[in-house]
Length: 180
Image (cartoon, rainbow, N blue to C red):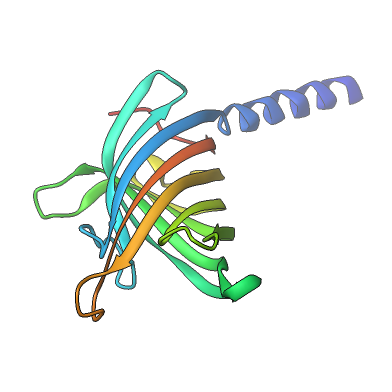
């Protein structure tokens, strides 16, 4: 009797694990400041994303985000750290200007140092935890690493800034529903 319970428990556990299959992701983005895409009210950066799921499916969509609470420190205050911000990725546009499939992340820890003499060039490195999704990503979990070069500078007169950000995305996403 105990053997049967153990076997049934193992079989049930295997079924649960199969629902949590993880896919490797790799992507490339092209973003702008101010954001050309605003998926959330306070997003400052936004643009296009190309995201591969396990090297077998390519998703083309948009993303936008913001750094959260930013602390500047180090020599001349040129090392920025962000925490608590978010980034949203959106795929499969609908006729009403919404997206069927979205992934929202939380910035666990981000770093964006701007070395002296860099003329506003810098590199962003961050770990993002998946916290929500819709459509085929409704039950998604995972972590996305984001790294890329940015440049930003004031426009003439100094009252407005413009910037560009070219991030690479990598990591794992679990519990993704199949494409419809």
